[in-house]
Image (cartoon, rainbow, N blue to C red):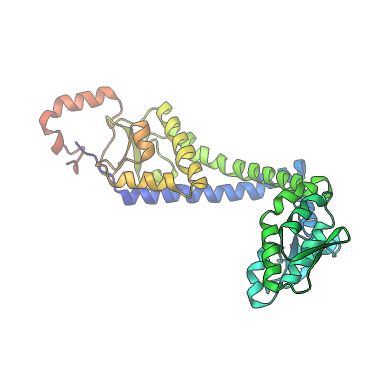
Length: 324
């Protein structure tokens, strides 16, 4: 026998849950996590130091809305941080190559900034490998010199090749300050985001369903949906914990790193099975019911009694008015 629940309702409930988690996560991040991280782990200070070092290295510049450079490595720390904070954009020199076709920045512009960065490195051997492999340089008096007849396109191609490999140079710039700052900021930002969003996610998808009779999330409560087992009895707490973890880890977390593939698979599966079960329902032997159409059983005893009393007439029972 088949119990159907409107997929549209399930989608709206899921969308509501996701929206609630995102809004709560943003609020927690802004009002709680970020201030704590600033006070105890120097989050803002690290961001400012990274911005300054990126620009100071000549790998980044601060640009305005028209992509005009308003601060570069020759600017003071105060100018860089002040302009960066005034709705300007911290852009990598490599990103600006996308605008070279409109003649705003030519090949010599990029090579000049790249040369300034190279001059600050502690290992010139690595730099010389790129000069040696390129046909636009001559080796004179113990150093590589740019040929006079180099075209703008050739120079731009050389710069692009180096910029594609630029991370390998970070460890040779001021004792690896760029790589260490980037790693520190990345880890702290990730932890802040993770903590900010995992709290409302755990509350909504795991904690709340344990204490509601319907075993539902906020979205399911709004749209009057319930989670039951295969006998149409409300799912027990252990199952709901497993279901919530499966949803968070396999479907949501993995979707972030796989461009939504688990969520797409889960949605497609729900379209092609009679009970509209998603991936987490199949994994945890649960089913979502519409409380407007069906009243879940309280326990196995009530279910067995129902089966015994209704017998062959269960398909027409008012308890499941839309059952096929």
